[in-house]
Structure formats: C-alpha cells, structure tokens
Length: 314
Image (cartoon, rainbow, N blue to C red; front, side):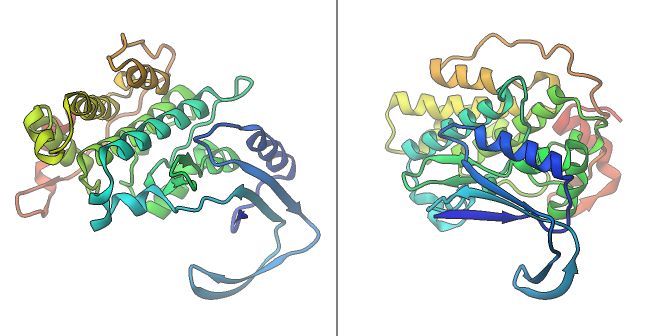
C-alpha cells in the first residue's frame, strides 16, 4: 500500500522536481516516511474534481506531479495527542514518540552529501505512525520543492501566523539554513512540551511556555500527572521538559541543534552548548499581542508581553 501526494496549484520546474524527488527517494531512516517513487507527466492538463470535500471544476494546464510514499497505518501523532484518547498513552510510548521524532529531524538536518533538509512546518500532523507506532516525519518535501523562501507565505496562508512556528520566523529574511534549522527546533520543542505535559499547544505560545516554566520545573507537578512512574522515568519526563524549554528559547542562537538533543536524550545529561557560528543575521522580533485574564486581546499591552514572555524590548 502506498500514499500518493498530488501537487495542486504549484508548478515546480521539471528538472528541479526530478532532482529533489530523487534525493527524497535516497533518504533512508526509520523515523522518516519513505518516498517510494514519483511521477512527472507534462503530456496533459488535469481536472480537479474535488478538493477538501468540495466540488471545484477547474482545469489545471500544468504538468501532473506526484510523490508516492509508504503508507502509514496508524494516522498522525496529532490524532493521539488531542482529545480524550491522549490520556490513554503511557509515558513509555510518549518517550518513544519524542526520541523517534528527534532522531528523524536530526537525520534531515544532517542530510545526505552535504544537503541538509529543513522542514519549516513540523507539527504533530506531519508526524505519522507506522504499524508499530514508530513516529515518522513527513511533509519535509514541501520546503525543498517550492523553496524555503516561498514556504513561509504558503504556511501562513494554510495555518495562520501561529501554528508551531516561532514568532521570529515571520520576520526573518533570506534562507540561511543554520537559522532555518532553529525554526524546526522551536517547532520540535513545542511538540516535546505537548507530549510530555499533555497540554495542547494553541494560541500564543508564550503564555503556555511561561506556564510550563513556572509550574513544571518541580517534580511534584510531574508526579501528579504520572502517578505510577518510578524515579528513573520521572527523571526522563523532567529531562524532556527541560529539552523542550531549551528548544523554544526566544533567541534562535540559544536553541540546541538536533544533534545536541539526541546526545542529551542518549546520555540523559545536558551536553555542553555549541555556538551556532555563522548563523547569519537574526530577524527582528515581532510585536505580538497579549492576552488578559479574560482571554481578550489587549493591543496596548504589547510591550509588556514581549518583556515578560520573550525577553524582547520594543
């Protein structure tokens, strides 16, 4: 069984599509969804009959471009993190999901033949589970096919300005890969916090991040959630929360690399931080809105929000 992704409304030059598709096929890691094959047919336009359940009779004159993936039987990570069913996942499974996702991202960032891949839309919806519930990252093809610069506008259109992306991404310029890797790390950090604390990521990230910083540093909060865990497993939970908080630091240069995160998980101790030399000019921080106790947007509190939650000054 395979899953087929049909590229609609975006035309990639023939040689670029073939070149990137061949690279995807060569990717081989247990935590990456395997690209099995691809198709590029310029001989005919194709008619889109239905899109997202709605009829849309419209002729597309561009080439037919398809990517074929191995089929993942157990849906996406999002299906297991949201709703009542999320409480049924024990810590052993959560830890497996965290380590597997980190390993997959580390593989993408290291790349093949010196060609690292940045995802730029990493989220629980783009982590699929195979028949053994091993997490597999997918969706990494998009930024490579349409270009990292164009990915931002597409993601904004699809997901809005929040999603699992850091605020600095929407004010960044250029396509420096070392900086873009920190974007993925921020997204990974939110996912780790979501898996470990069982709190859904939504709205302005800074509010939840601050709450976790203040309430989840102590073992008492962790033991209230994971009542049956032993001392070693409780330390694992604490370590994952610390990793997640490191990943979502407001300064991109202070976020760990995927390789450093894997060292941390494997050795169960924080590695000595390595400077991201040559990471390029970092974007100017955004000026988000704040939320008062009633949950309403308060434009006049922007500066205070930046200082309290992100350490930024207007």
